[in-house]
Structures are given as structure tokens and as C-alpha cells.
Amino acid sequence: MTRLLIYAQVPPPLHGQSVMVGHLVEGLRRNGQMDLARQSASNGNASAVIAFYHVNPRISEDLGDIGRWRLRKLLLVFGNIFEAIRARFRFGLDTFYFVPAPAKREAFYRDWCVLFFCRPFFKRVVFHWHCIGQPEFIEKRLSLPERLLARLFYGGASLSIVLSNYSREEAAYFGAQNTAVVPNGIPDPCPQFETEVWPERQLRAETRAALGSGQAKEPLYYEVLFLAGRMTPKGLFDAMAAVTQANRLLTEKNPALRLRLTVAGPFEDDAERGHYEAAARELDATQILGRHEPLAIYAGWADEEKKNHLYRQADCFLFPTTYAAESFGLVLTEAMSHGCAVITTRWQAVPEVLPGAYENLVEPHDIDAMAEALLRCAAAPADHSLRDYFLARFTSERFAQEMIEVLAELPDKDSL
Image (cartoon, rainbow, N blue to C red; front, side, top):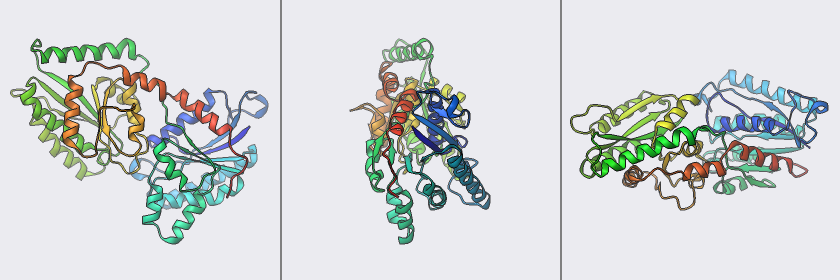
């Protein structure tokens, strides 16, 4: 049996890595693995192959606080380290599961502090690489002593878990004994899809088709959604430019149809908000003559309930990310689960989330291609295929089962 110390954050703050750690912990419990904080070996599931204890090392209050160093954070780090070491001896844990930080110097220092104190007490270490870009950052931005420390603390793990084949090479930089590819998976956020959402999508697509044939009497809107935690690097302003351009093309091609963009997420600062407001005015100027509804709608931060409502109302999810640490794009799976059309970029591992030869992948910053893809999606009939693809590949149950499999078959010894 693998006896696992899970040293990884769950929400809040809410972001892809913390969400997936939460799904991992819940998935282990749901699949009969032994949570040592809740039960002992004597009353646990006899068929369990993993016994685990979770330390939640939360030191950031929100997304903007991640990677910023303060004295309070240092005290919290040492408190979490103490809890991890205490649990190691209390429960006889042998494996240290850790999610390395994104490519920020201060965040690296926090990691190295944790690994310096914790790693020697464990037989094996498992790194789950949710972010990418660390090797390039280490080579280009760190001093020689820092590079040596990075290789020492991140090097020679028993197992590196990555989210895609794209990330294999980055994990290989640190010389893990084994590498496993386990794509993320989430609980189905739209279990009522067949009875409630799919009929709505079919009806909206049929109404748009009638508009194109001249049978519809009222103007229509094709609803586009952009949702992200870090909006500028995830492509907010490329998305706004593409919707604006598509609407200008519709002025001639289909004067009674317009694309309407809903934006959800936090602004980084007043400058980003000001940039959005200027782009929104430009988009609103493409409205149908004589109508005054805004074509850019800011929905603010979206919790799970609000987010699922936005996906359900959207016809298309537009995500032209060029985020340097983009390793998967969990929002893409959420959009697919709701049956949205998806337009995104050929960026790092993002294409691996979509089906092979997917039509609506565009090059980064190619506004013309994004606008063409938007018009293509707006003219297409309702499509069930992305929902089916989600169910086959990206559910939380599949994720939990694959994680249990790779964690239960660890090599004997860590090489540090």
C-alpha cells in the first residue's frame, strides 16, 4: 500500500491546480482509499491501495496574491511543514506528493523551503506538474546557484505526473525515474444536459438557420463567452477584437445576426479594466442599426453556480490563450461538458484537450482566423460531439481512477 502525504492546496483561491487537488482528494475518498484524517487502518477499506493524509498549504488569499512574499506567509509555510512532518511519523507515511509552483522566483523559494525540510523524511516524492515553463525560467532567469538548487530539490523524483504529452519534455528536465500522463478531469457540471440543455441548443441553432434563410422575423444574438482567472494573458482582448471583426463582417453577410460577448473574471488592475471598457465601446458600435443592447457584457467573478449558468447560456466558448504557464485549460473541459462550441489557440498543450484534427484551433493572435471560426460556428447546427468527448476523456471518475493506478504502482525508492 502506498502511504501518501498530499501536500497541495485546495480552493480558495480558485484556479486549475487547486481545483484538481480538490478533485484528487475527493476522488480518493469516493473510490474507497483510506483518508487517515478520518479513519484508521483498523477500520479502513480492506481493498484500499492508498492511505493518505492531506495538508492544505494555503498561504495566498486570492489569485493576485500568489507568488508574493510576506512574513505572514513564511510563518504559514513553517506551520504547514510541521504538520506534514508530524503526519509522516504519526501515520507512517512513505510518499510525499507535491505540486511545484509556477515559474516565479518567490514561489520557487517557498517550494525549496518545503522540500528542504520535508523531502528527507520520505522514501519517495511525486511531483504533479500543473504548470509549465519552469525549465525555461530556471535556465534564463535564475542565477547559477539558484539553478543548482532547482535541480537539487526538483530532481530525481520517483514519479512526475504531467497533464499532457506536451509536458513530458519539461518533466524530463528534472530527471524523474518515471513519468505518467494523466489529463485533468472534473465532475460533470451539467448532468441535466440531455433533458434541458441539449434541446435549448438545438432550438437556438434552428432559429439561427431560419434567420439565415430569411424566415425569422426578429434579430438574433449568437452568445459568446470568455472566462478566465487571468484575463489578458488568457486572450481577453484578442477575443474582443475577434468578436468585433466578426460583427463587422455580419453587417454585410447576415445583417440581422450579431455576436454578443460575455466576459467573466477579475480585472488585474484599473488599467486592464480601462482597456476592457475601451474595447467594449468598439464592440458595442457594431450593433444592429436601431438597436441599443450592449454587445459586451461584463459578468464579474463567477462562482461555480454562476459559471455553469454562463456556460449554459453560451453558444460558443472563445479562449485564445497565450498564457505562459498554460498546461491544460480546465475551462475548455467545462465548456465541452455544456456542449458549447469551442474556439481556442494552438498554444502549448491546449490542442491535446480537443479532438484530433479539431477545426476551430487558430494560431495565437490571429484575429482573422478567430473571426472566421466564430462565423463558422454561428452558422453550424447544434453539435453533440464535444459533450461526448468530455464524457469519454475528462470526467473526475476517470481522473481519480488513473491517479490511483499510477500512485499505487510507484517505484521503490526516491533517488535524492
